[in-house]
Image (cartoon, rainbow, N blue to C red; front, side, top):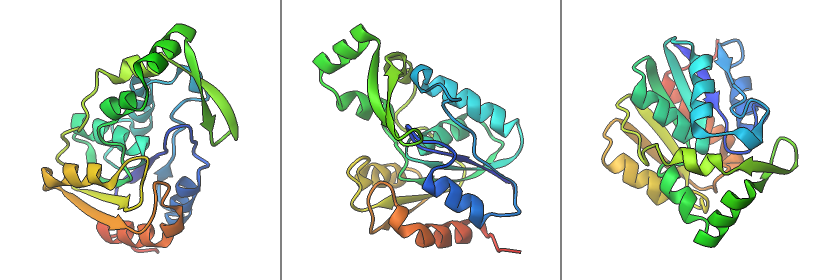
Length: 209
């Protein structure tokens, strides 16, 4: 089985609960978790995160795993690179560019652009951190639904209020390469970790050695 690269979610880190859970489950197997904001959350963009993924993959055949925004990034990368073998996406933020802008009113976006930054709670630092408006501007160049063709498993919570499960249902509906599993959980999915593991291990054909 190819090396696994795990992409964490927005305002998160390689030390997130799901990142570390899967790292432990794949103990002894090549498993990398790059820091997607490179320690500079304020300057983060989708483009810069894709650059981090590019360097982490290093052109090797890989399996990509991704959570929320990390799932969207994995899909974007796979749509552009044939060295991605398979994907496991946890509550992936499909439709991210359009849905992100829809979260804010025109006045809020104007204020963000004018002030240059907006605060978001960062789970790694457990406090608010500013994010520059370039994040919004940069995201507009990317497609809502990356058209990758590799086999993928999507695990999505039925009670997800951040990225509604209908987003993944819609995506899977016109991507026959995607296997969708809806689970009784919310966006974080941390109350269903063993179920996530069972589905992931089965999909990847992984057996602990």
